[in-house]
Amino acid sequence: MISPMIHTLLKISYVNKKLTRGFAMSFLFALFLGCADDSANNQGRSSNSSITSQTTNQYHGKKNQRIVGTRGTSGTVSGYTRRIPGSLLERHKALGTDPSDAIALWIEAAVLAQENKDEGWEALTELTLPLRNDPNWSKKDSNHYFVKKLKDPASNCFKSIIVGTSPENGYTFDHEKISIELTREAGADSNGHKYFIVSSGADSPRPIHLKKSNKTDLWYINAYSSIYVDVQSIIDENEERFE
Image (cartoon, rainbow, N blue to C red; front, top):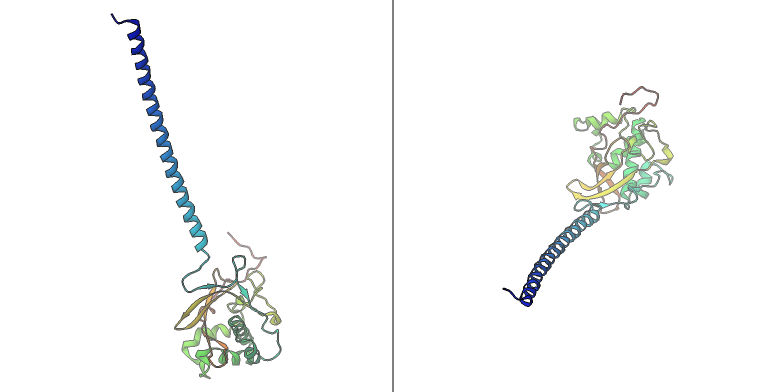
């Protein structure tokens, strides 16, 4: 027969084993939770780092591209082409050292040509490098589509480049307030320095290439085929539409 003292000792030992086992299980469970929390925190930090990286990088643009303006603005608007007196070519000599002004003056020349004004045709010949040494450029097959747009007063591709025009207002503009909005510079290639300008009749900016004279520092248009692509038609508010 087991004495009362031995019986008591056995009970204490049994209880201690249960307590020890329970403590061990609790410790292992807490350790597991701690590891899980660390893993979640690491994933969170990794995710946050990725988001921060994406947020930081999304404004840098593509390689060799310079965003013109800040995050809060869509771009840089040129001054009015007629802010100084003179003919188109005289104003180009004064303002053409700035790419945005050179583009705006070229657009003014295009819309004047559409209005069948000699000044517009003459300025286009002088300000467009591929046309400068070819007095018969308007008769060449290679310029057929460009000339077709210039001779069509109803074509709005050039007018859409002017700030303030839109399909809703019929691409109307004030000749005294012609300006363009340049969104970014995309580096240089064989066609020259590439810029993107806003067209109110297109979903995305239109590219145009310029080159600068090493003697006068004046900018001239060199590649421009995207500028005379068709744009959105004029929107008539009174016309029935099905959407």
